[in-house]
Image 1 (spheres, rainbow, N blue to C red):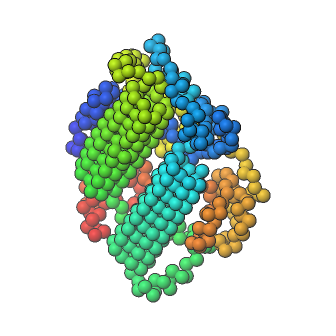
Image 2: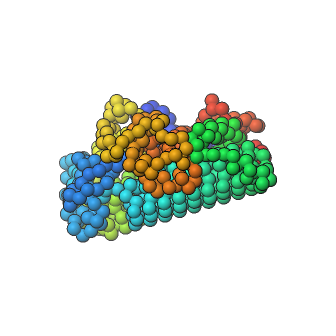
Image 3: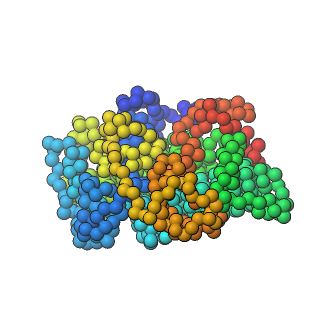
Amino acid sequence: MCISSLFMIMKKVCSITQESFIVRDEDIKIYERLWVSIPTISPNERQKVRMAWRNDRVFYHRTCDFSGDNIIAMYPQKTIYPVYHPDIWWSDKWNAMNYSQEYDENKSFFAQWYELLKKVPRPWVDLVNCENSLYCNYCGDDKNCYLDIAWEWNEECYYNLFTKYSNYSVDGTFVYHSENMYECINCYKSYNLKYCKKVADSSDCLFSYDLKGCKHCILSSGLRNKSYCIENIEYSKEDYEKKIKEIDLGNKKVLDTYIKAWHNLMESSIHKYAGMLNCDHVVWDDLADSKNVYHGFNVWECEDCSYLYDVLEAKKCVDLNYSLYHPENSVELISTLNLKLSAFNSASHFSTSIFYCQQCDHSNNLFGCIWLQNKEYCILNKQYSKEQYEKLKEKIIDKMKQDWEWWKFFPASMSPFGYNETVASEYFPLDKEKATSTWFNWSDYEPPLPKVEKIIPADKLPDHISDIPDDILNWAIRCELTDKPFRIIAQELKFYRKHNLPVPRRHPDTRHADRTKLRNPRELFERNCDKCEKDIQTTYAPERKETVYCEECYHKEIY
């Protein structure tokens, strides 16, 4: 079904790339409600700028600018603003209102906001109520986790992205409500899976794809409520257990053989054109319980929205990344919780009618503020009466319109991060020359070599987990692909031994990139159903080898 038959649209041309993009009638109403002009650059260009403000996984050893104590932070030592240890940042030893500025109508708003940005201290990383989880970021209520990025309520989880309500998940991407998971992608409510993708309500499965309600399956795909299957052939429990005992995944060579077979299985499987569950009038992929959503990716319980990426429970919103818990009537948000009637914000939560703010929580009617809590009617961290605020806000917006600033997110050139440190580089890769020529920053930082007894090449590790000595905790391993050294932590080694898995030969960042490559791009393509030849829009490019079915043909085949 074509897009124009689903939505009433306005077509625009991006002023940067000259590519065409769409603005829905519903989006225009949202812009008008917030006094925001219709954007003149494409959704991808808008998203690049937002994502250039989010560093998920680059950490620095540095000192707290208040106490001098050593800390781990997502900002380097010489970043543009002070960085505080959490004990200081959450204390009453400093006050963000003390950095307030008078608005100067003779200067651009962004120039004044940047001056404020450089003064107000920042927290080391974005953690809330976490225990023994220092090397994590954008997480809440984690316990004993390591390099767990974005999400909450996990315990003993390592090297994950968007893992939630899970225990003992290692090297996972989008794993929810699960336990004992390894190298899994988009897996939900499952137990003891290894190398699985798009598996739900299942347990004890290996190297499988697109399973639901299954148990004890190996190298299987497209099964529903099946047990004891190998390559989609059902066995007796006794025969299955006999065969699985012959598989020694603790041997690296054996594991590599099965990983290759898993990749071949996924390529040869039947693929549904898009991942949608209980949706109506939606376009793109990985949506659930949503209605009237145009261009949504990893979206749950959203309605009347456009251009959403990793968003939950949004209504009447446009251009959101990593925004959760009922955002409503808002545009251009990243890393936010529960914002309403707001625009152009990052890392701000539980607030209403805030604009151009960062890390402001539980507040209303703010403009251009940084790290204010439980405040109202403030501009550039300065307190005003309601009448003063409304009058000055209108004046600032008028000036921003004259300066062509009003409809834009914070300029990427003001970000404290290099483009190559941010999530923008994962979805929109650019080399240094291209990034810096288009106003993005770049980081040439090279982390120091780890202080260990020795650094060994990955190919010098013993093939079998049983031959890995305890001393490996005192070594670093040189990644087999990038040569970047990395360490194994004690909890991780315990997990590999318990589950009979080899020690990884690749750096955690490389493993994350490998999983990202196994997920479809955030791009729509026109192609035909490989069964009935019906026109479909899908994230599977036409030249790809996979067999892709429309919804009707997929359900007939699988169910």
